Length: 378
Length: 261
Image (cartoon, rainbow over all chains, first blue to last red; front, side):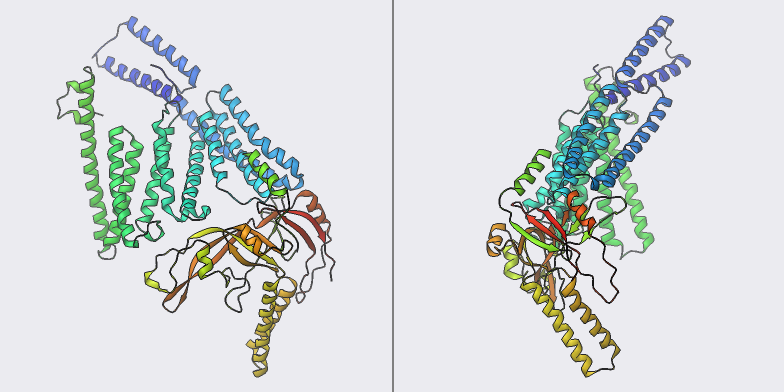
């Protein structure tokens, strides 16, 4: 099996750890006992594999290492934020005393220097803590670059700056495998595309936030991006899908309550009904799609928004009309009902997968379970 | 991207400037946000507009920004509709070009408005000399006239359009008129139960001008004036030659001290 990313390597290492633990239990309960030769070759094989993975991807072989890594990730993140803020304020502190030409040279050189440092760190350090740190500082330098060039030369603000920041953030995110930078790139790109959508509809670009429908093209684009293969990058597809769904459902939620800010030339009430229906239908479809494709983030986001749409409707219908205890009882009962429906969907999905697996793989354990018991798997 | 930005700057500054005019501290006061942390210095382009009402002298809803003018700027609206029939579209805004007039009829009109307000107050006080409220109002009106004459900006937004060349052709004196980008939003004015569309001039862009180091040194060399007593008004201490290029982006070419009169 070819392992391309740190995530895949970590998954394989975790799998080995679980296998060893399970094998220990099986042997203690005398279900199967490997002979010393088999044990030795298995231990050698796993040992060599873990060594190779550690050398190539700097994975965590044990739980303690994982906890340490988590701490290092937090430290690296805080360090990057601190350094980025420090660069920003350092430049602001002294730029007034520098001649214009020197200001421009420094502003142009800083992001390049950051990019070179990031690429160097990616090559020299497998864990990626330093590369991510340099990447964030580099992005800050680039943001500073365009915003201060704009100030120095009194240039009117333009949405193209957002696109350029997004491109640079994507470049750094893919170079350093950094989800934080990917999220920053996505936010900038979504702002750019939404500003363009606002301009196409005749509005001033900065006021794109006042028209929630401006975010729909960005949501669609971002949802389609992870259809391109992203296996080498840790959790990138998830980040794209979550942001895409937020950029779709949040505007729909707003428009379902304040139809007056829509681009649609319809009476306010009709627009609100339209978006209420859209919210329910699309969130339900997202749950179904997430279950079908095995995308838990899509299921969870769909779930969250389906609940939000439902509760805002309940508020509209019942808040003034019902005594409060009845209102909250209704909320609680609905949550229980939804829980039962989701549980049923989960079992149905597992059964479906089990049948598929049994069909495709004759050695699958599900193959041996009677259909009514297969729901207890997983 | 940096190449695009810098070539845009080059492009803006070559050829015949779109506007070249001398403004004073009244129109370009210093701003220093985060003074302790930011060593950069910028001047704020202080602009005003004459409103519909006699007392509105710094109104963002100029009297000329209504009806046909709003239609020319691309807004769609219904004038005189009853309040209930209108969709809530107050936030609709558009990027336009704005003509700013320096020290012209609009400014003189603002001074006249202040003087008329003072005359009214004096007349009321003559009819009722013991009224302390009227005494205080006359004092305020006097201050307003003085401030119009000595400290208030003389830069007024006088027109707006979607085509900057058309606007420049109408206001062709490059030493008195600036054509710059701005943002207008549509709002409604209530009269009884009817609503009338009105334009709100949100901003001009850019509205701040960076002071490069060479000019900053001149500005800092201007001796600080004696703090005037509260009853006196501080006259402007410097004047700036501001140039607008063919991309409607400004820059400073000269800063020099002004003699105190």
